Amino acid sequence: MPANLTLDSLRAAVEAGEIDTVLCCVCDMQGRLMGKRFHARHFLDGGYEETHGCNYLLALDVEMATVPGYKSASWEKGYGDFVHKPDLATLRRAPWLPGTAMVMADFLDHHGEPVAHAPRNVLKRQVERARALGLEPMMATELEFFLFEESFEQLWDTGYRTMTPVVRYNNDYGIFASSREEAVMRPLRNTLFAAGIPVENSKGEAEAGQEEINIRYSDALDTADMHSIVKTATKEIAHSQGRSVTFMAKYATDRAGSSSHIHQSLWRNGENAFRDPEAEHGMSALMRSYLAGLLAHAGECTYFLAPNVNSYKRFTVGMFAPTKAVWSTDNRTAGYRVCGEGTKGVRVECRVGGADLNPYLALAAQLAAGLSGIEQGLELEPELSGDMYHAEAAREIPRTLRDAAVALNASEMLRTAMGDDVVDHYVHAARWEIAESDRLVTDIELRRGFERL
Ligand code: ADP
Image 1 (cartoon, rainbow, N blue to C red):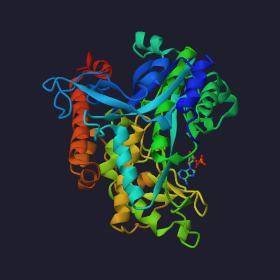
Image 2 (image 1 turned 180 degrees about the horizontal axis):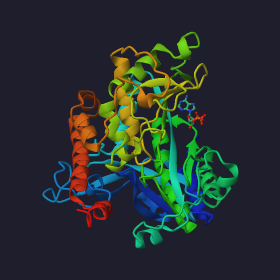
Image 3 (image 1 turned 45 degrees about the horizontal axis):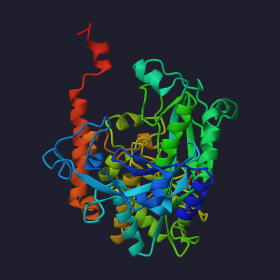
Image 4 (image 1 turned 90 degrees about the horizontal axis):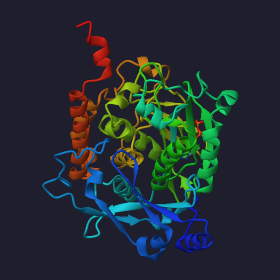
């Protein structure tokens, strides 16, 4: 579905007094929308050409700390600017905010070249690679999150000790239970839809206060844009209702985590090229090689599916977060599940990623791995069935950020696909997160040790 504004229709909406603000958004390393709020008239008078922002936006950590050691941005280099170039194909209303429209922008350097490590540019590069093979990546992300009664401010001020899930029990598919989440979910579905984001449905999930939202699949870049917009809109609508949400992969030890499954298929001439009705499971040879690539490089790509120390706490046996890089048809314990077997919608679903992933980087890494499988004509290993958590001899996904960073750093496949500078940049980001987690004393350490050590 095309985004629903052009410069002309934006101008008409501004004249009619419907829109007065345009958000010009870039996506940072953490997958967050950053940028500026334009007066709509200034945006129309030339602001749409380009704007600028400090290059540290791609060299900060989650708390906006200036991380030392990045090649692209540092105190030594004076933290200059990057250009933010609006991609006008993404101009749309943002009806969850009054009088507001929004546009996604790309990071360019002062020579007008794409900044290679900017997440949206990382994905574009892989999409171009697929297109050079005559293939269009079509993808969807499912997004899970938790909804709490308290506001963000209340939780911040009380140190996150009083979180009350809106629904108090596991409400997987529950209609009655999830009705009480409708104060947030209904405006979310409707305003996203009005923004040209084709919401399929939302549903209660398998933990107290957990929800999932599904958006119809689209080309990979559109899907990543929609994913980051959905996250922002969810936070904004929850905030406007005096509630809070979290997209952390695991917010509490004894609660299930939140995932972001990634559905993937490659299309040729408007048809799903993963489909071969004559073949086993209706999977084409192309799909088999793509899936073989995903499996062969699963460890190297894990960082992009689980980019935080916390992400790895989601990989708990028996909680539907997979720990093995194996494939299976319609089996939710496998890291890679073949869905829509025998139908036009046959696709692979990667179930490894958490809700804290950066969608551009995650989709790019999946594509890089799958395309390398196709280019090398990799053979797909036999399907595994049954409970994969206990499958012997199956390939394990890295279980810590430290292991994932080592695998990323050593990945010839990702270095070839994304470039050394890009891989080095994200290895550095991972190492910073690890160093911070090694350095910080946590509440849990205090509770366990203060008296008893
Ligand atoms: P399930 O109930 O098994 O999770 P759904 O039917 O809800 O599956 O679909 C999950 C996601 O997969 C949706 O976002 C849907 O748009 C997407 N999807 C459907 N067909 C394809 C396809 N060919 N390629 C990529 N994604 C697809």
